[in-house]
Length: 344
Image 1 (tube, rainbow, N blue to C red):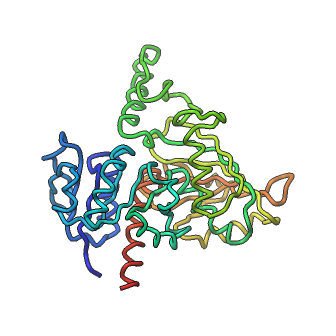
Image 2: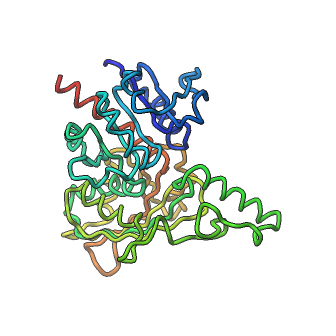
Image 3: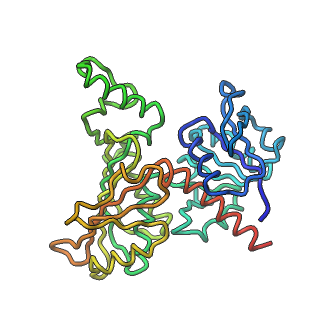
């Protein structure tokens, strides 16, 4: 297998740093790593394969100057909007982790375990979009079940870790936790979130839309339908919780025909990058503390609805920085390489 010049845009951020770790752990065929960030980060170094790699300033010309072939973007939607076209013009394929391109009709939105064939659409604009973190883990868990029965409706409630809002949000939770023990909690003011997050839950992620749902919730609706190429009904309620890392979801799925919990459990065990932990009698079920740093989606509490035999309930947990961002982006790039090499 040939090796590639790989750029990571936003290399000094939480997801960018995770992408670099995943590239190394997955033994991605990197010939040369090109970490890119804003001018203020230029000169810093990134550890990669036991050495230090200098961070370069993100410019429109750097992709061509560095001969970048694959560019992983994770520096915010405005950065992707400004620089992705320059990377594509220089001949690179872009895997974009922001929401900027996700709903563009001519750009594929990909979870490799679910809709790998859509990767071929990258030629439209040279861009492949990485879905929202909560969407990724949900559709991975639903894929083996959708292979058994058509899905009519999905109701999901998310419990999202603060790392989904960036490193500053993680710092804010830790500072508020310290304030609790130092008896200063009443005096501390929230900065990243609308309310204090320590000792609290906030049913509000992203801004509210006219229909009463937040943009985060509507991302789950629209992205799920696009990935599955199916206008099944989807309703989401997204909640920020005082957890550093690992998103959790309660999912209720209504199928076209009845499906038993045991049949679903066996299908999930065979699913790609899925781990089933489901023994309530032994208090065994997925939790954020168990999944941190892992690249699989963990599923438990699989049970049939009391009233409707077509409905199943389950609990799904995954590391949002990896499965929900960095790992999925790297897997997209790996699948893109496989596609390119298969086609000569």
